Image (cartoon, rainbow, N blue to C red; front, side):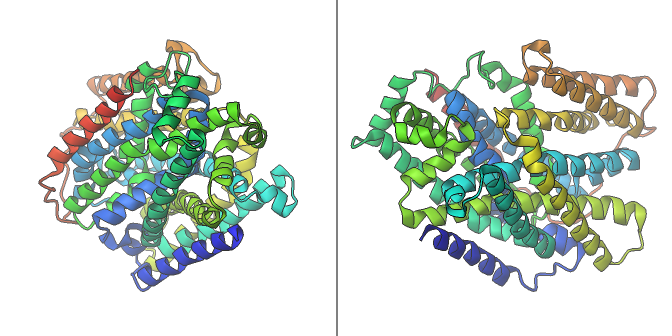
Length: 532
């Protein structure tokens, strides 16, 4: 029943996506890479959410909550504030330039050297860090939900390989043949299912904890068992301690939601600025509420491990097994296949979105701009499809190799992201602050930042007391470096002035400033409510 339901819902989303997107112009550059600049707020919000709400969040963040409690909600609640910044500050600039990629903005601002460098960084990082992580945790979670080891009669590592290959084949189909519109539409379908299914998991889990009592009593039982479980501010011993909210955690969120190609590409496909802002704000609201799905189940799983021997045996002390064990334990069998299909959808969402972004970066920024400017539209799309295939294949090979058997996977993943997040964000902000900073100053800053971040991350530096504080110190230092280089003569003759290419209507949504302010106050209120 569970397996049959899983395949039914997976096929249903695929067919519905095909019916909506067929004949949608994916054979053109703009159609394939930017959905023909036709995305409305609902599809933008759905795609933003599900691209993010994948295994690194669903499995990884619940695993982090299993270990450290509510303090890890920082990755979600602070994201809401970062999305407000995207809507009000960055998105108007992006749509004004009519770009399809962040490196194209760097090309306009700094020149070809920075564009080529950042394109290469994004593609390599997606291939070596993000995609292997998504595939590994997705396979781990799906294996637990569907109890695939026992069903298939395979070892743990053999099961992981099997599921990773399955995810790659299905996800690659969306990205390689459907383009961004297929990604965004399938994301929206799966996003609705994920919200419903995720809330069901939380409901059934808390019912299990309550053991006949009310849902409120379940929270009380957990808090009495572990007084730190529902404290929003992490202690100094936790990975996300409260001071990191103002340093590395804030900067990683800020980059991820305002400058990361994989995430914000769907906002470039907005039909106008107002629709883009509506979609981003809607996504911000759901991100602030996301701990209900992404954190609370992990906290409850930690309680059940201590109080339910049968559940503890399944989890076997491994935090990344907790969420899959919960799904298998608390969901009725009829819903198990549905939720597994939704989870696969979330995995596929991130996987195919990253492949589409990689294709966009290579085809438009490298192939068409530098290697073959006279290439036809069909040739550009084909190179994007080939790039997606190669990136996906390498990620499949690396996924079990990089993460199998590693503890604290989510924190490790975030620190790896910091290696390239921090330098790219630094040159973006410096370029906004200093209108005469030139390409050589940016390229120098970028290279210096990559070297310092790589050395500090892989050496396990304890400078400034935390890896996240180290990121903040490097970020400030890099901006100071680029400003100094500009002052010493590495600067443009004339200040940079952004041009409006007329790609879309730039009339802003009139309610954006008010809604944005409300969302920031909402995020702060969540923290204040859970300060115990």
